[in-house]
Image (cartoon, rainbow, N blue to C red; front, side, top):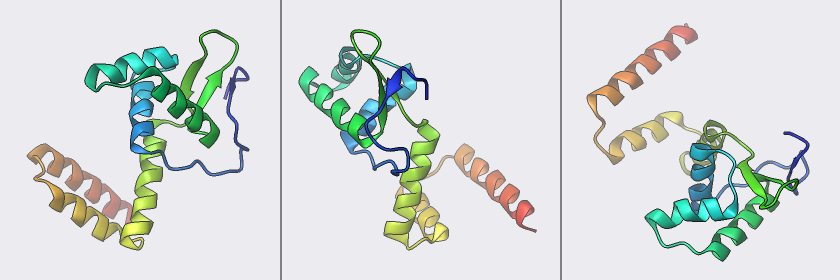
Length: 138
């Protein structure tokens, strides 16, 4: 974290799970990088009507939750995701794994595969991953 970006939660607190609206904002920040509330609102509004004050309020909540950091050295203030997309996805999967599947990776993967038909490319990627994991476990 650079000294210009601040958040309002102690470092030892685990990050809280983002809501659907917060994830939409995080996606904008992951794809485009640091941005102002107005810039984020414009991107979100292009796909679904979204008001400036709604985005501002969500960003304020996200700052309190430690999901975004705010650069207070410039105007308008610029926000960036505190954690990478990969980190957040892993946190969400880990949470889902324990809450819904009792920690069973096998059950999670089987349910994920059962939700929709996978493309041959996706299946090949999964096979390679499993082969690599099995090779490392031997």
